[in-house]
Picture 1 (cartoon, rainbow, N blue to C red):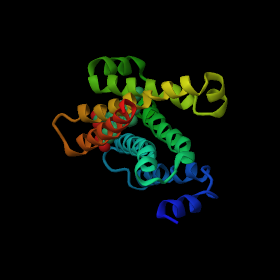
Picture 2 (spheres, protein in one colour; picture 1 turned 180 degrees about the horizontal axis):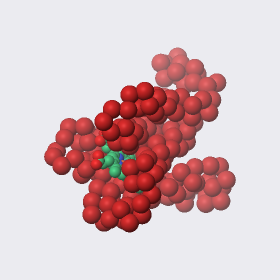
Picture 3 (cartoon, helix red, strand yellow; picture 1 turned 90 degrees about the horizontal axis):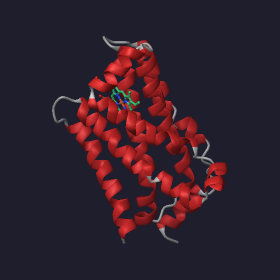
Picture 4 (cartoon, rainbow, N blue to C red; picture 1 turned 135 degrees about the vertical axis):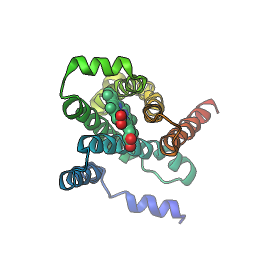
Length: 198
Ligand code: HEM
């Protein structure tokens, strides 16, 4: 028996639902840490932390296929939970921006969106991710049909590049961390593109 067969066998009885709780832990710890030690700008700390967890969860979700192809380890049943939790972090990030950062001041929000290109890019990424999250259920797959559903979900590749670009653009200078996220997504999306062309 190969190592991948052993791992797949060990994973078979492990359901996906605990992942929703497990992936909630970093967000809960972030809230707890910010509450305990608010620092000079607690809202910014939350906004940034949640944005980064969104990117990390999106990376996890996009790693599932290469792991299956290259290591023959099948984690497909965990992909929906990871994808939905990535969206949860994007949504929480947006909620902190709207409610805590901008305090629902719509004129300030509109000014921010039109003034700062990185916000437009973030909004675009969010708008692509929204229908993907809404259709991440068996009923939608049945209603749309697997082909249309799969095509719709290709949107995730555009969304992750835009999400990372949002991070790159908000820094006034070239910085290693956002560029690393962008590079990881370019490799992961490039891999899928290369596979599709082959
Ligand atoms: C409606 C959409 C979005 C809005 C309005 C928004 C807004 C913001 C704002 C205001 C900041 C802080 C900028 C600053 O420090 O001045 C930020 C940072 C960030 N956002 Fe977004 N964002 C959106 C979507 C997204 C999405 C879709 C992702 C990821 C997939 C994301 C990931 C991040 C990251 C990683 C940071 C920086 C964290 C850091 O500096 O450590 N955002 N966003």
